[in-house]
Image 1 (cartoon, helix red, strand yellow):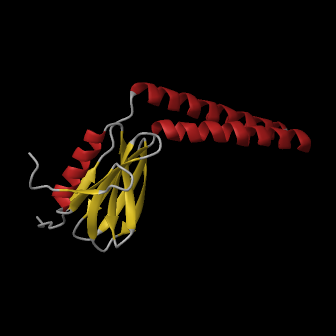
Image 2 (cartoon, helix red, strand yellow):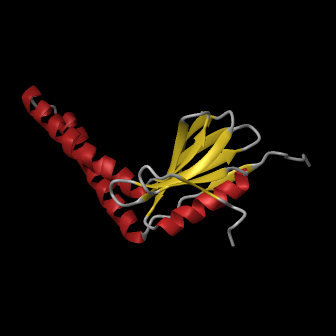
Image 3 (tube, one colour):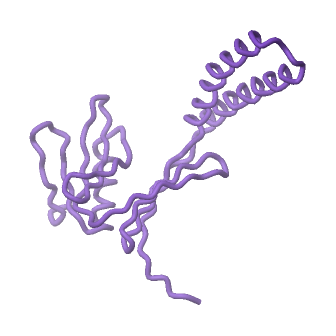
Length: 176
């Protein structure tokens, strides 16, 4: 058995609730129904003008349904490989997944801030002014706890940027 010395931090998104999955199934069902109609009409051999009208409707309504199906069913997981300095973002829809890899030289700090919608976002900063947007939270405490966990695992500092123009470095020694 091999000794694996890789150190990875996995941040897995929560599972979708049942009503989000039902909505995604409805949107996917409409998309598949419209696709079936297009294939059936192509089989019948209709006029070119009717085909263009049908394709326009399919692209607009079918595209809407497919995008909202993805919105209600997709989850995003983050894997931070500390030994190889790679951030892997994994988008998952059902049993399908797609990985996006970002090469990082050195992690500097993690910050949390309040956006214009009142949510609290978290960023992982690296290489001077580059950052990786992680997750958004509804409460400041949840965003802070997430940043604290990441900070402890990566051994980096925390920046509280919730007040505009008044950024505060959080002292981890004084924490409970």
